[in-house]
Amino acid sequence: MLTEAVRDVPATAAIFGFFASGWFGWAQEHPPATWRPWLLTGSVTALLTMVAGAVLTWLNRDATTAFDEDTSRSFGIVVGLEVLLAGAGAVVLHVRGRRDLVPVWIALVVGLHLFPVAALLEFPLIYLVGALVTIAALVAVPVARSRARPVSAVNGLGVGGVLLTAALVCLVAAL
View 1 (cartoon, one colour):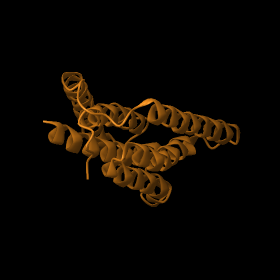
View 2 (spheres, helix red, strand yellow):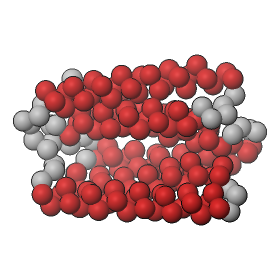
View 3 (cartoon, rainbow, N blue to C red):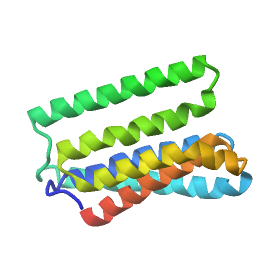
View 4 (cartoon, rainbow, N blue to C red):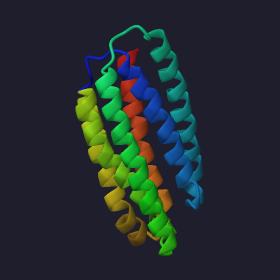
């Protein structure tokens, strides 16, 4: 489920921890009051996971990694396309007065971009994370509407939860 590239496991914990904190933060835009302590706990846990993953990455700096010249170039292209697509969609949604859907759009793009990333890095766990983030994005609007909750809160909780769980799995594996 993980990868043979030793350094990539704690690095993934750091990256997913960083982004999980961001999604938990986005969820705090207008959450129900009872959610705030959980979202704050998620953000702090994610940041601590990020730091631990970064330290373990540094300690394993000479270990194997999937990144070489070709992989790095392809990874850069995938991430560049993700950023362009997410940004363009966010602008279109904002112009059309659908600002509430921006986090869902970005989550969908993030989830889908993880599939080529998983293939490039030969890291099966990232396929699962991509699928779960995509699902979290797709269900955010109907769940939020059916429960009279802000879309950003539902989306951020779902995406943040997936990313934090994956970050913790990677951190435990790296230890």
